[in-house]
Image 1 (cartoon, rainbow, N blue to C red):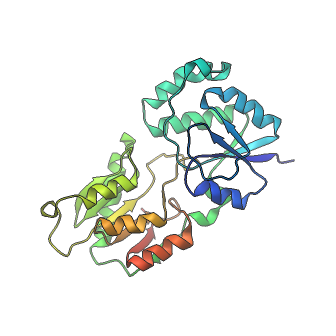
Image 2 (cartoon, rainbow, N blue to C red):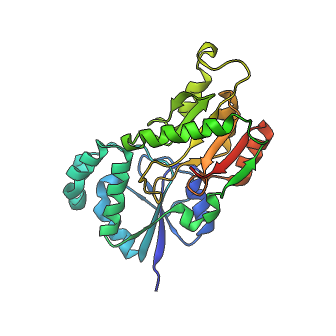
Image 3 (cartoon, rainbow, N blue to C red):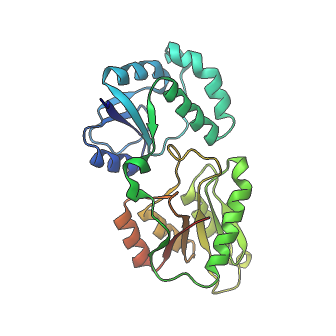
Length: 270
């Protein structure tokens, strides 16, 4: 008999959507991490992962889904339980190697404890669209070349574990996503002096895709309704996302926002 599902929630709309789809799931939040769940089932400290594993098993949980944004926590070693003390050296080493290394370590840790780690898109398959134009006007003729250039840039930086997005305008890279996220990238583009951008009338695209080898169960890239306004402020024409491998959060509102702003949203294979 299948056990219970637990949603390990960070900030953003995704944990809320999962809760709506799985009302019987346990909702776990962490001290110091913002969340939009009202109310959560259980709040926990990162320093006491052993106690968390025990609590999940006591509740009959055999499946977990990690959803929402979480900043890297600041640990208090004085609060470590025995399990956290045991894994702390490996966790700290992973944290020095990039987000992918941390997430792979966390997934392996939960699996070693007997839990099945699910991806949000396995529970909500409509999050990841197939190929096609999802919103707005058809892309301008140069958008396809810019999208291909962006996909090439992301593939080249993928082994460095930097980010999941870049902006390309008439073949010029205006920026790549790093630790600060996509909104920060688009703000940088918006503040780029006009003389450094391509000739008047040229408008670039945001390209978003997972890193090579990325575990999409716990770190699938996403866009949401706010992305449209950020693109408009950056003076871009739209966004190209990898079909089936990038989530659209709050899809109806997101597509409506792109349509209202006159921006295209295109899903394609990369």
